[in-house]
Length: 75
Image (cartoon, rainbow, N blue to C red):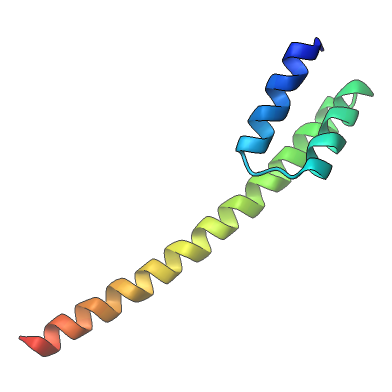
């Protein structure tokens, strides 16, 4: 991987919410020819992000229900 390509990957991973340790682990796996292990690491991080997203969606649903109930009481 060229230095430019590595910087691009690092930027992309940082933009995706990956911390420095995860980025370094991923790059080391790639450098060691362990692409599948690197992909598994990214898949795990994606799962964590998706779990957080679902938790936030649940909070929004709770607020939406409360707003609905309060509006119904006002009518």
